[in-house]
Length: 127
Image 1 (tube, helix red, strand yellow):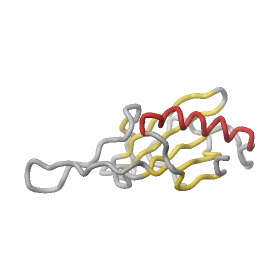
Image 2 (cartoon, rainbow, N blue to C red; image 1 turned 90 degrees about the vertical axis):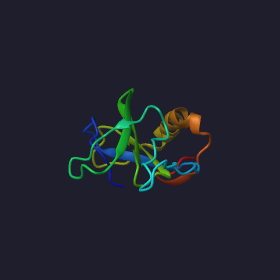
Image 3 (cartoon, rainbow, N blue to C red; image 1 turned 120 degrees about the vertical axis):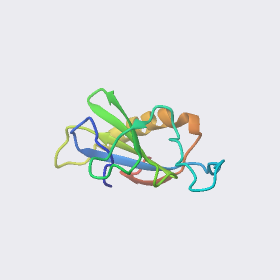
């Protein structure tokens, strides 16, 4: 899974979860033409430019958690998905399975305002 935008943390992504967001009403355009792009699904998400494509609208959030970083990423070009990354100084190895529930709990806490979200993909899968 490619990481969009520019993360603050340079640690590698050692686990990720892609969540399917609930359907939202289409934006209403008061004038003829192209509808405005959708707003991010969570208030904590901030613009995170993509240096190689200034037209892309990517939003992210990063939080330090006791030795690892949780990063949420939302791309306005793919508005039905929200991605969460577990970034840690783990090189050449997979995330310990005992850490997956902590990661998943932190993601659920941040996405609680959206209600329960189905998992579209994950590595490793939440248990």
